[in-house]
Length: 357
Image (tube, rainbow, N blue to C red; front, top):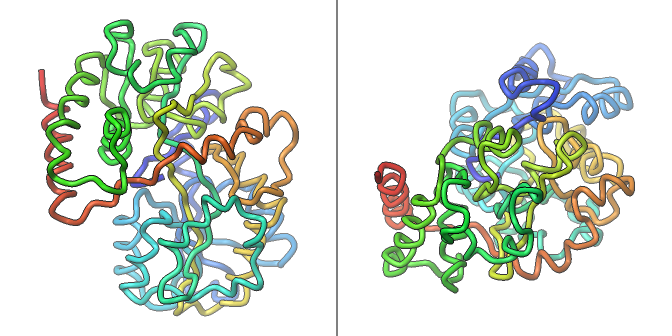
């Protein structure tokens, strides 16, 4: 979810405890097993155990948050230590540039069953070869308590800068998606942002900040929404509300008329994997209807499965608003992908917004 800290259910296991569910990192004594660098949704035994039982192996997982942290772990490891990796779809090229990943055999993957909009070919296919397959996606958008706000207002990003909700908003503390939302609110495309757009975006962010009760991390912002400290979460989405829907049915998310920022995560295989056959089997399992359903409803966070044939039940599909995805995807825009210079200016803009009184 784009350098995004991931969050467990508010009820039951705490976020801190969920992070402790990581299994041991790769160990050479488990050469026949599978060693995976993952986001926390892949640590769920409900996802891993069926694969382990079917193949008589252990999946050793190591969690990380954000592509930079994941690539740093690879740099600190020996070639062959890792077999598969979960990575932001837009960052596949970074692994390819470092010559980490093995091309995937498209004829052995359910490419035809994926939502077309999340195949992310421009990011995952390089020089005609596919190096990643999108497994899960969702939106950085507006999360809200539908008993505390007018749901109709949540159909426009203008609500985030309206005095009507002053002091009732929490902002997710990650600059790229929220800058993307601010850009869309004034009619700009996230894929075309330049330095010249930053002054106008700055004005929108300043108005959001003036309305905000807090700009905070994922766990704290979700808690604020779940406990009623905030009625609206800027940057929230199904990954915040869906996993706690049964306990907090009043929480929901919207895809405003101006759009939402699409996040997607992919699976990649390491070219130095000592167990490529099992690595491909794991990818195939996660992309299967059963694996997709288990991943989509992971205890760490929910999200949309990229496979349209995911074996979700009717209640799960309703919570994820599965039937509405074609319409949502038409309005979604990709994460901003600035070059290094523009990225630095965006980070500076974000820091200035946070520090503003």
